[in-house]
Length: 431
Image (cartoon, rainbow, N blue to C red; front, top):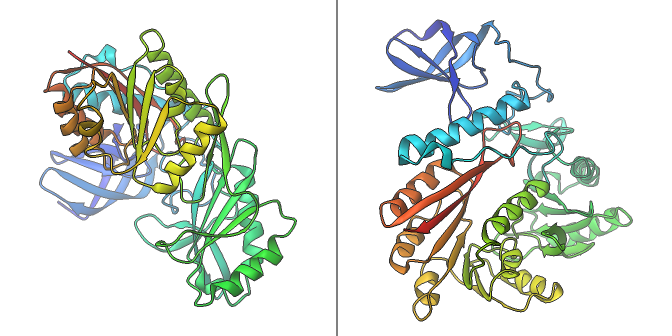
């Protein structure tokens, strides 16, 4: 095969965001293309059954193609689909997700429910990690270039909440042209449902106390909560502002705090939509005993505890468990017990004496292979699996579906407009 493909028709989209074409009997994956595009592309990688390539020239644009909103789209590694209308993005996410479950697991197509679109296509992201580098052009803040660790400056990211963009630019003025500029590799920013912004500024400075004093002076009156993270092995140092951010979920409203280093979904309206989906699925037949694995600060735990007699939440990050306990007290949810421990082994421990009616799990992108194998032995009546990665979801569901469970429904949610990523909720019952 030559180094170039002169005229490739993009036929569809793949998980990961690339367009798919066919050439010389091989599948060709081309990032930043749209179905209907005709492209000349340069081959970057060849395998036995597929080829990866990069666009050199757009010979004929698809009728669906639109102009990206971001000036660094295609260079920045954050977004893959800004060149597609939002309706097309959702249609392809739903199609790709359904294909994973139907083709690889053999589930009934009607059990994969329609995608829930995001109410916000832009400015939705409530948490972000900005990468930093100090250059001859000054202190640069942005994101990594695609497939590299080279920082591309991003003055205003269109998918990030406006308050975060404003805070980022303000913090840049505090750090630029100082001795600390070359010692700040990353800035974590988050905004809550009250539009309060928290910044965790990572520092490699040998004397972090001077840096904290400098930030304390700069941040006075800014309204920002500021922390300094000198080392990932220690808790961040509080500079100023509130200790926790607050997200609001469920009806009546639960107000849940989470601290620096804790986890909250990046799309707050869609987080509420997912909680409504889970509560709605359980309300007609409420569970008695519930185990919530990877429970974080109680995002799913506390709404579901309102339906149950008893709920046990498990999370390996101790600070999140502290917040979950505080959230339970402040919201007067008394039938919960939050435990700081690894998820693996918890189902065996808490399901050995009394049966578990429901196990919920919301694992990281790597999934929960060992935990799922454990659930097969413990045999809870129902399982709710929240996933951010279809491939690991399919891997884990395969174990459950061949071990006595049946998939009742699975629904994708778009928490990440302009990207290929898809969140999902799957309900299973022991058959």
